Image 1: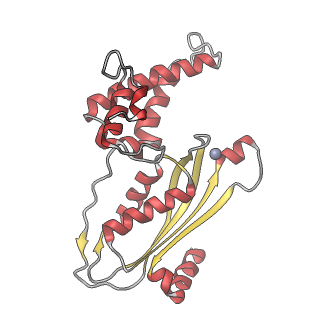
Image 2 (image 1 turned 120 degrees about the vertical axis):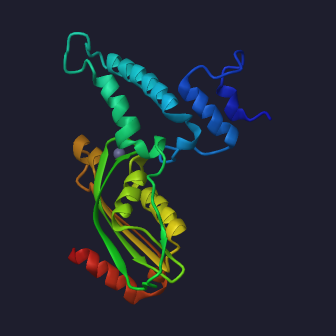
Image 3 (image 1 turned 90 degrees about the vertical axis):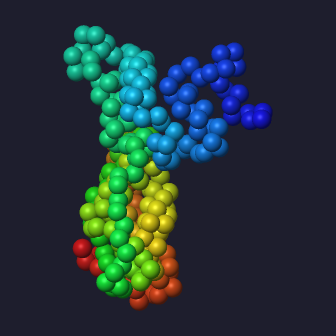
Length: 239
Ligand SMILES: [Zn+2]
């Protein structure tokens, strides 16, 4: 009952005061996690509340710009920036947090396909959780279906990947999240992912040159069968 996490809420009113506090209170009541790369769409009550969250965010972005001592009143370039950034965060670059997963229809493997399928390169766009600066990369997905697997249309892989990537992410966690989701939905015999990405927090800040990072996840048959893994990696490198 005395969860220390809820003590941040104003005790006097008994109710959260802002839209973000209201959403946060629901998440905490449900005992769910709300890290940067978690989706919280189920805790947002429809488009009206999402719009209200956008208003709150735009107001706070305006405060941030003012704290940077930028005169948004006379500088026409920054006059609408707070609202533009709020919209961009909630509905574009971080939509994978605030919007539900795109509709994806799985269908049974009626043809009993059991050949390696490779999707890619799929362009992925994300942002690092550390600096909220872009990560741009290429993703390859290898699926070895079994008779009991579900399949999805080719274009759906990029939509699912986009939903996972459109959050403040850590590359290693992003590929794991995507692998977990694909495994759950497709129940493949084997699943392999390779993600190569450029981290603009390195480029932009000029910290160091190693801004390129490659991650891979191998599961099921790709772990147990070195020949299959080799075939996948050769095809990825060739493409
Ligand atoms: Zn970073």
